[in-house]
Image (cartoon, rainbow, N blue to C red; front, side, top):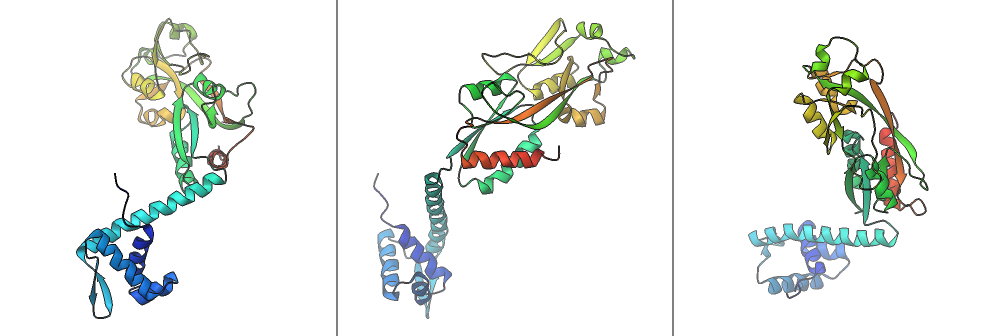
Length: 296
């Protein structure tokens, strides 16, 4: 494939002639002679084989083709500027990518709010987001697959700051048999019913959490699937309150009236994946998460 005939400087000259409303003004703006600007535009039209400007009186007006190509050239020059800025940021140590691993219990609203705030500050650094359950966060750290982790446990050899406390609640569909007992429930009552369990996404350090005394258990891969199971009366589960708040308010799901263990709390920690060398983009994103969750 042949390389482009036209240079970025030629496109910049065309843009300046149009934006400055003339060759003389463009020459002054670009600190060049008017004759060099005229030559540049003439050469550009010759190379493209398309007339871009037509002279009307003392002013140069865009042709229809020139209008289309000018708009495309603006995007081209903007991309080139972004590319140069990215190279400069990389030279200064900004990471091209931040690998973010987040426990599924972390509220998605906070997650999206933090990522949205990070975009204009990222200097071109991308975010690779991976949602995990339980020990999946630990393994991402230990296998060096994460630059920043939000997880429920800080593995040995790592440092983490408490970020947020998530409340889990035992719930079932409002028509579930457990609610029809109309009394406080014991673990013996739960043992006879189907418990929906969110499966640990880790491969090697499997962890269980919450009460797992039911003889009949179904495992699902995500909190969303657990909530779907609850809404179809498949069983009961401990799920984050923020994930079922709307269903609780609507009456579709109801908290189980347990004698004990009705609520449990899990602290989520913010953990750098490489504590010995935290990159500026990772550090910036970590600060945003801290601010986002500070009021909690």
